[in-house]
Length: 270
Image 1 (tube, rainbow, N blue to C red):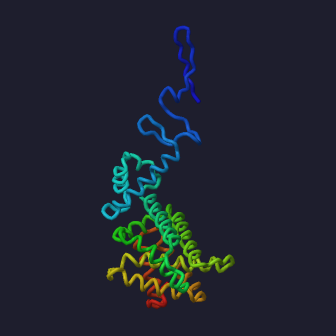
Image 2 (image 1 turned 90 degrees about the vertical axis):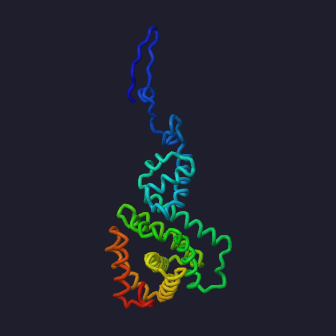
């Protein structure tokens, strides 16, 4: 730390340089930001950012997954829009927050008694994926933008991690407790089912997304033919790989290539 020697009559005082100019040194327990002249504890600041993100979601249908939506959300909760500058990933942070909230809502639905007991495993999986994807319906016109944000190379690791958590929770909710190689196979296959349906959904203009749910049911039915599904999962990874990191259109092109080269029908595209 640099110090300044201030000499006054009969008084010699050493004043820390940082205090002289109103700066703050970093501390693991003290502060992360200033609002005016008041410092905020890290936990309080993180909670405030979470409130801003939650409030921002109501503006996404109009403004998209943008900084403008985040600034509007901050004003809704009485926080200066300048807080948006503290988000390192901004738009990606908004999409990731939405994904986390949707996962928690899905778990809450299961815990509160979502009726799965009278369904066979494939029907349980279809229902859980449908419940989760229905949460995106209010944002569907802007979802291609969200997928493009998630497909950016910087954001891909978090996007995959969030989907892996979702797939794992779905299998647990279905009652699957596999711990061997089947654990990886089942989650890879279900990840393909979920992602393909998610990408298909914005293209669906049928009433109440009926075509999407029929598409989903077909993918889940195929998924229970694991021998076929393992190969189809490889096809999916190969075809979609070229699109990841480019754009939503790249992802869509990969899906359409998968569907056309594997036969196109509801029993062959995965």
